[in-house]
Length: 325
Ligand code: SF4
Image 1 (cartoon, rainbow, N blue to C red):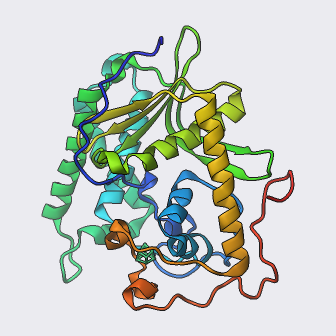
Image 2 (image 1 turned 120 degrees about the horizontal axis):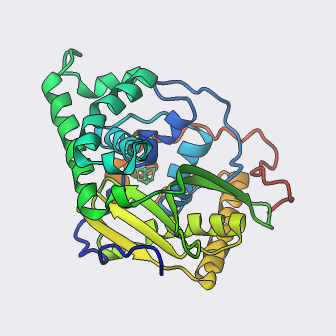
Image 3 (image 1 turned 90 degrees about the vertical axis):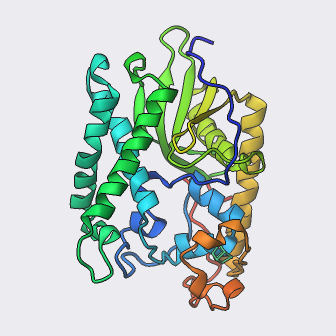
């Protein structure tokens, strides 16, 4: 293994608290943040790790995010994740010797300003009850982001890393026609031998062992896509948990990734069937407390909106160019 070793797997002690990439809720990513539906509902056409996880957690959640595209409120935690990811990505623009913790900390406020310019509604995260700005809350939040950035330097040394890719968009169409896509935080390629290391930053804490499968599944998803795109199985998958200061690594095999592909195909079949039937069942779980959709969830006494694809005869997810699933 020519890629430098990292710290051992964590003594995981907390529930999964990974923060979504870019702080974008699914609706925000679809251009609906701030209210209103920007694009008409349509059948799903591809699968990303986040949406696959949604369906596994709760099919109704998947429907409300992917098909109904209901807006979701931005959160301080998710927005902090966006800012920290941006700092860790852009720090590598600097020469290796200048990638210091002080420099990274100093970038936090600028990345927040950049994000705010793109999404002015985020200012509401730091408003007092009457809507006035709350500078103390913003300062505390920026400090919390700086602490996460600082912790990264206890886990990795960016002066000794030269990532091959950062924020890499990957997409592939499987033989079945299913399109897989997503963003890889960082891809390292060993200078000798060309081994691939896939790195993902999490601003939450490392999960307890019983919750570790989900982030690992996400990493295997990326590994499968990269295998299909580059013809080589990534040597190492690495999850960097900034919230707890842990690094989880896993070295996948071809058999692992073939099993991941089978699981994704089964998942897609279930999504296809639910899209056609309109039967998206809620599944109550530990993460319901963080769900923005309790008001329309039968598990909490709500009623989902009318199914937007009900008038689409035999609605099926669009699939890739190779045909149907
Ligand atoms: S509240 Fe829970 S059960 Fe209801 S939609 Fe959200 S995740 Fe699913």
